[in-house]
Amino acid sequence: MKRLLIGAFAALLTVGATATLAGQSEDLQALRDYMQNRFPNLAFMDYANGSYALDAAKATQWESQRDFPPFLDHLDEGEKIWNTPFTNGKGFSDCFGSDPSKVRVKYPRWNAEAKKVETLEGQIVACQKANGEKPLKTKKGKIAYLSAWLASQANGQKINVIVPQNDPGAVAAYEAGRKFFYTKRGQLNMSCADCHVYNSGMQARGNLLSPVIGQVTHFPVWRGKWARATGGKDGFGTLQRRYDGCNKQVRAKPFKNQGDEYSNLEYFHQSMSNGLTIDAPDYRE
Image (tube, rainbow, N blue to C red; front, side, top):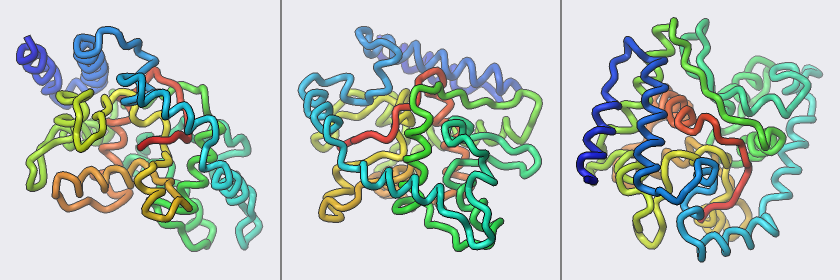
């Protein structure tokens, strides 16, 4: 039965680029059907809790972390960065609008004029460059504080990544992201889907592998692993920082942060959580 489910799921994911909007809808439905069969007691909204939705003991530990979040000071710093004017007197609000609660939910998105996927962190950097500022590094540190604060302002809003049906560029970017997700790589010859679709809920090095649905709702995320590496000072990282870590874990060379490969992957990856609400930042192991 498991092989039949995987086979049917894989077949649905081979829909060609010529039917992309339908393909996106079919991808979503196929993924949800597969996960429903894999985790029949899990409600759709539970996926936002990641692997903690699958393990009551771990969920209790996670809730205790949420009672006293270790990242509140960093959120305050993110708000300060948002409100600090550039040298020319302008600020981030001149790029993103005056309402910070409306920013996070827009990304990632397809820019038809630039012919590429725009991510939140990529646009933060673009805003700085356009105003003559030195751009922030895009994986951790201040950019993660700002991005996390913007995400916190958007909490409760639904993820709704749109792939324009009539734009071949958007179609190609979505398809490239999907291909990346299902392509095996590295010395371990593993894909994102191997861990987070077919083996989701299984143990790997003492951790439960989270389902792909819901993985993006809490980013930027504070990871215990990252915090320990800094003596507890800073555990924040962006989604593309996590992509780097996954590639390294399968012994594959990471791609350029905010390059087409990761940005297209983010376009597909986030679209698989359409309908879930933003709940960020959050703690993960």
